[in-house]
Length: 283
Ligand SMILES: [Zn+2]
Image 1: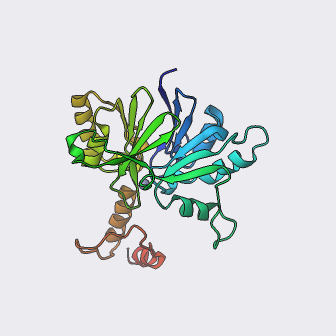
Image 2: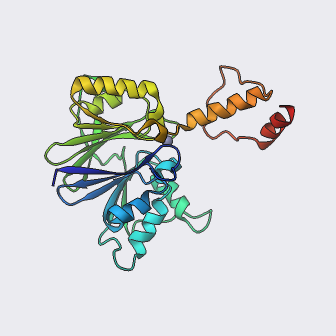
Image 3: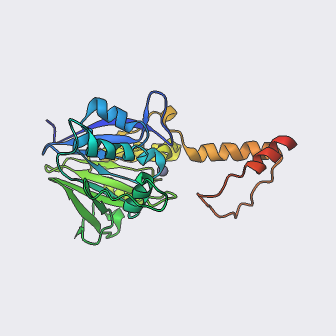
């Protein structure tokens, strides 16, 4: 077995497609650990067909639904599957909000936060107890220290991504140094270039990988640096930024006022039904 083997369980950005799950990647490591990288909608069904849901450690780039919405069902499998539940506690690594965010999603009551500690040891990418190894993969990291995390013999490093929620790009290094970097829905940044330096594979993922500038830059830089680039086909990269812009264009066509250019971004802004209704009537 190669030191790291990746199966793409799904790579459909923003939402699952009829024949392709949302983001989820299964990494089989030479030491026997199986690492599930993101758990978007449809990923668990693919994992049931191609892997062992009871035996995966889980890492999250971020907690947008297309990267985590099958997590609750994965927990059900690991806890209760009659023949192949988790044989031991697994590791979960993700944003600092993981325990609360995922706990709320899996709780039976809105005031409760589900406790997963019976099956999962939850850590965060920026955990202060992570061994702080000054891994400067290149000068572009400008001296940044990337905390080192371990899952078995695998070393993992994460850097903050540019995205509306707390997000990370992730470098996974097998014991023999074979390495893969997952962009985790980020735009092009110095951190991404730094983490990908010397890597064997750069995997662009999530809806943001529809960004033509990001795709072109990644292709150009990877070719120059000898890094293999894995990027989903464009029709699978449903960028919800484009969906939002298209909605806005239709509203403006229907007579709604455009926002001023100085408008602040608010990823949780309400999309008000009356606005749509008024626009439709006026249009
Ligand atoms: Zn996202």
